[in-house]
Image (cartoon, rainbow, N blue to C red; front, side):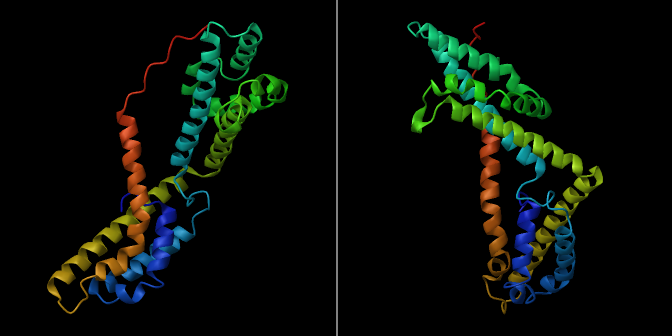
Length: 248
């Protein structure tokens, strides 16, 4: 359950104390841990919404940055293709060059800090309209054009700004406290599960599926989180192909 977010824990504990409470209280472990977990649910529910969002704010920032950089790379490589093609018209080359200079002069910009990427997106959003004709000159699959891709790029950058602002509104103590609360709650649930497992082994009167009755929803919440964590780990293990040399 180590991948559960505070939002997951809030949902799972609410469910545990609703439809699963009778199963929980059939064991001595459940009776022992019930008040402690109820206290944790109360503490989680009292956290600011920005803290108990669907993902930790750091994870949301990272995912938004991946989206931002993905759009940026797509635009850069699209313009790169036209700039390298030996038979593209001078007008098309000029349009690709203007797009590159206006929105993503170099791939290295995508390695900038969240704050720098956000600041650049806000500034570049101001000139989006004046480059609309150039951007719509380049079609993409699905009926889109580079205008759609650049819009996605800039929108993601602006979301980085909003999330950085939200993070600034959270006091450092609040962020650290939320992390400690999450870890403590997961620890209690893990010890509860171990206790129920022991009781099932030594008390034949308990239903054999009692663990599933108690932890069924929490386990359902954990499955996609664990899968996402494995995918993320696998992606980090694959080195990114080097970028081609940039055209001046």
